Every structure is written in structure tokens, then in C-alpha cells.
Image (cartoon, rainbow, N blue to C red; front, side, top):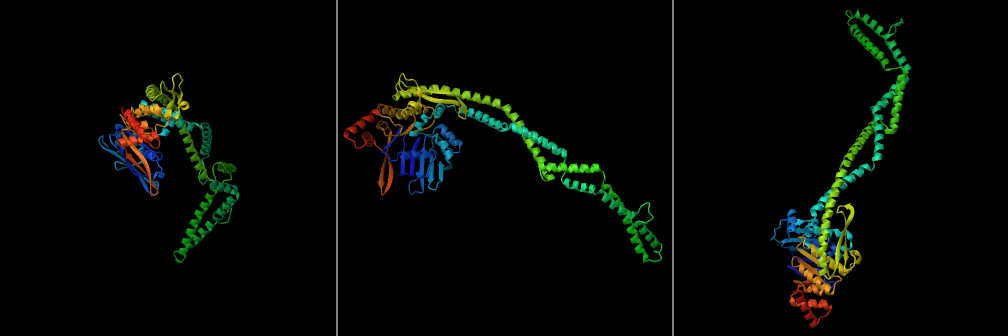
Length: 558
């Protein structure tokens, strides 16, 4: 339960230290005194979204601290799971600091924490029901959450969620791949054609220039061969000529000097040079002879080269400006085709997974629906009993569960129906409930659910909206009854509810030196009587009102 709340620099509250007790705690005060600020401070402790606007004007930070004792097992297990060791007999202290620059700080038993952790723990410590929560009853999509809370079907919901997420992921992937399946089939045909064309072409890097050179040589082959023949004749001569070749003349000169080189030593170097030159010319003649082997006069070979070059140019128009561009395109096409073929395999695999995943989802959904249907019957019976106590005589309260589309919350659409008077056909809650009726219906629901959860503190912020007379008395009795099993904190304007309090806290506002201050004071018995008399009168109270207030307190405690 919530034992202590410290508020510092929150709106008009400069500093407040509020102690709460077991049982029924009531907060009263004039409108605008600061009751809502205390609720906002509690929301901050529970990890709800806050605004720097909450910080008191002129202050650089605001602080809210709360201490809890007698913590429930569920909250203790979650704390320990998150690394905050707390035992049953130990105090839990939560602190949240808000800075004017937008920063924040959270501590749990002096250990750093974040807001998401605080929110996860906070919902297990305190359940706050505010005026806006009544509006959730007017939103049929929220009704299923009440059924689930009563059903305690967390494990079933988790199994369903896993099945839903699995089916959704498989379906999403399958649809993503198959959405463009026809386009991919056409693309794969084109890629296979292109790959086949390029592989058959067997393009080599630098091939274009080589072909150009071969064609150029082939086109000039007559002139090239004539030049080669002329050079060869000049060196080697011909068989049908009497003209000596250059080689023959060199050999003749060498032989002439050979005969005198021994008697005339100066001739020997020249002889050796002529011999060397003759050998080099013979090698050059052989090279000239070989040159003719690379020159062809074959028209078919020339045509083949020209056709090959034309084919490469055609491929360049389609796939790139160079042989390397074509080769790169080929590799890219192979990779793209491989990806499409991989997708086809994945699609076949996913297609085989779809039906089992769908069946698992349907089975899990049916199990979840059954848990809700069973819980709906019981919770509605209990709510009817609570409503009867709260002056809904002869009321019927039903939960209509119908099939809906599969979502992460299940495949059920649930809507609460009510017949507030005997003989009336139950109709959707949203169509017939007034403000006061909504408050009592929500109290009935919270009373039933409080028997199911492990939350130690229930807070009702103006649950009395639209309630008066005998119904107000019944609401007060119900709150007092709930407070025997759980700590209840209630912000109220009703005398009947205030009269039932075990601990009465009065919130007052004053102005000092141009600043507004809010103070929270625990009332003794006499103070409680005067405050209840003020609530009943609205302004000044008389001795008769004081006696009435005293009687009301006695009556509520019976």
C-alpha cells in the first residue's frame, strides 16, 4: 500500500507531506485547492507522461517521492526480475525528479531507473480510476480488457499473440514476395535470355581493339604482303634473279677479308663485324618470312571478324559502352536471377508454412474466445450483484461477444449491454448510461476486478460525479467495503463518501506575498465533522448541519 507521498514544487504545492493509512482515505477541499495536483503527482510516480508545466513557477525542478509497504507478490516478483531486490517486510521508495529544462530522473530504492521501468512497476502498485476512465465504458473496443482482467488469461493471451505474430509475419513475407510474382516471372525470363546471349557471346576484355586491328590488317593485306615480299627480296633475293642478295654480298665481303685476316691483323675486326651482320640479316629475313603468316587474304575470315565486331557493338548498345560494362552486366544479371530463384524457393517454403500457422492462430483464438466467454458470464453476474447494491434495482448487465477480425488482441468483439430497469431489453452501454450511472457502473466493475488483481492501492478521483441521494450513500458504503480488503484513496465532493473515511485529508489553498500555496492537513474528528458540514452546505454551516454531519459519520460506520 501507499504509505507516504512527498510533493515538492508541483504547481501550487510548494511542499506537502501526506501520510496514508490502511483502509479508506478521503481527500476533500474546495474546487481549485489542488486535489487534482495530488493525482497528477501520483501519475508521475507511476511513470505516466508528464510536462515541465507541472513545475512550480520560478523553480528549476520538482520532486515527487512515494513509499510503499506490504507490497503484493506480483509487484515484488517484477521488482526482483528487473533487478530491484525488495522483501515483503521492506519499504519501497520511488522518486521522480522533473527539471525545468525537460530532463528527468527516476530512482527506485536509490537505484537509477527509467520511466518505462517505473510504469511497468507502477501499474502493479496503484490502480487509479479518474473521471476520464468512465469514458472507456463508452468505447466498446475497451470492454474486452475488463473481461481479460477478470479471466486472468494472460498465458492464453500470450500464446495467442505468439500465434498471431507468427502468422502475420509469414503472411506479410509471403504477400511481399508474391505481390510482384508475375512481374518477377517475366523478369526472370528476360534475365535468362540476356545471360544466355552474353555467355554465348563470350566477350573478352580488349577484344574490340584486337578485332579492329585484325580487320585493318586484313583490309590492307595486299599492300602489307607486297611490302613484306619487297623487304624479304632485298635481304634474301629470289631464286630466279642473278642479283645477289644483301646477305650474299655480306658473306662475299666476309670471305674476302677472311683470307687476309691472319696476315693482315687490321682486317680481322672488320671480318668479324661482317660475319655478325650477315647472321643478323639472316635472322631478320626469317622474321620477315614469319610476318606473312599473320596476314590473311581469306575473305571469309575478314567477314567473320567484321560480324564479330558488329555483334559486340550491338551488345554494347544494350548492356554498356565497353566490354567490361558488358561483363559487369552479366554478373549483375546472374545475381538478380539468383535472388529471384531464391525468392521462388522462399515463396514455396512460406506457402507450406501458411496453413499450419493459420491453424495455430485459429486454435489459439478459439481458446482465447472460450476463456473470455466463460469469464464474461461470471463477471457479469458479479457486476449485476454490485449494481443491485448500488441502487440499480433489477438491472441486467451482459457482455456480448461476437466474432471479429484477427488482431493482436484476439478475434473477438465485445460490448457491454445494460438494462437499468426491470422489463427493459439490454442495450449498448454507450447509448443509455448517464454520467452518474457510468460512475456507479465503473465502481461496480472495479469492485469485482479488485478481487482478482494483486494491486494494493485503489485510487478513485471523483468517482461521485453525477451521484446524489441514496445512490451516493450506496457508493460510499461500497468504497468503505472495498477498503476493508485494499487501501482505497478517494478524492470526493460527497458528504456521504467523506463520512465513511478512516482517514480524512483536507486540501486548502492560501495566498501569501503574491504566491499561491496548497496545504494538506489530516483532520481529527471535529475537523472532519466541520468539513462534512461545509460540503453539505456549500458555504457556512450551522449547529444543525454539524449534528447532521455527526449523525452521517455514525451512520456510515455502522
